[in-house]
Length: 513
Image (cartoon, rainbow, N blue to C red):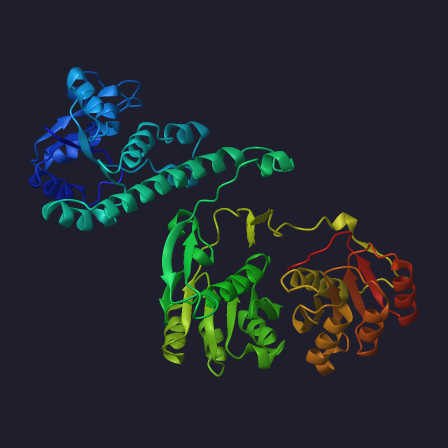
């Protein structure tokens, strides 16, 4: 007698697969809930408890944790001593395992889920059984994914599962357990004090993601690429966005769409962003969404062509009409009015329209480097306004202060060295990614042109010299916001006073590399 042990949490497609396994000559063995499903479908299936002689105990916490089960899984069929021990102990081999794990992530993501709920959904017997089968995969076929049922079933029906396929399934099984363990470790770690680096950054760290799809290529056609997400996309954000229309998203589309979405998702009222090459070239906040769009587009109409537009509110018909004349690659928004969606669909068959759900959790930010990975807390939090100080003789006006606050948000979205010019809560010019701050200021002033007059300036880091302010003042900029910390802060403040500018120093910076 040779057993196939079936005990998956996800039972989709299980009955059909169990029939294939039975027809291939295996006796079916199962635990309580799965046994009921298989028996209810008319399949002959034995209870694990009947084979082990031990009932399920501790409210089902102990079912498959038994030498009869793990002996049948771990015995090497090519080792005569192993097989003799099985015979001496009356243990039958288990040659197939079908299993997957409790929905831990789904449980802890539910509103009101308690710590006790989380603990009860930490699977013990399942991972142990899967690991044992995967360890002994030359002799035991282990299947954790219902998507593999048809493929493995065809092999079983035609004579057996190849060694190459067994190894692939074993690798998938270990990864399945590793992802699960990562989710549990992350949940327990998140309950710790994240102000303590030893808690936030443990000695050993794993990141768990599920494949959403293989992309046509990465940044360039010769680079393979794929999209992975937390929870397979159920956690929201761009990785979990629903494509409502248009051609498939590319690697660069995802990067730019993420920049567009995150730039507006952090703002407290109606906002629109336009992104090109991961930089926010247009950003505006206004109670009227269509006006916010027009102002964001006006920030850099040339760069907007072929760009990505981000909204933090449902796209209206009026806004969709305003977007008609401009070619865009992607629109990312939490929703669309039905008529607005139809207008945008007719605008281009290739225009990608994404519906984005806000993230349920903001994880650590990861950046790969050669040989490793850099990890940091994301730059999403609000600044401590108590640290902000007006350091000049002239105080900013009420309108200037509102624009300075908006500009300070905008500069964190733009690659360093970032200089942003803002007027009426809209970017009118920006410079990004330059090796020095003056070059960025030149670019921002040139992009703003006449709109620079009466605008305010934000710099993502301190002014090392007064030259940036002097250039800005010559273009008509009236106020600025930046971190403090330069050895020449006094010179910078003196220059601002001489130029009649108001300057706020924030006490912190917002580099984006």
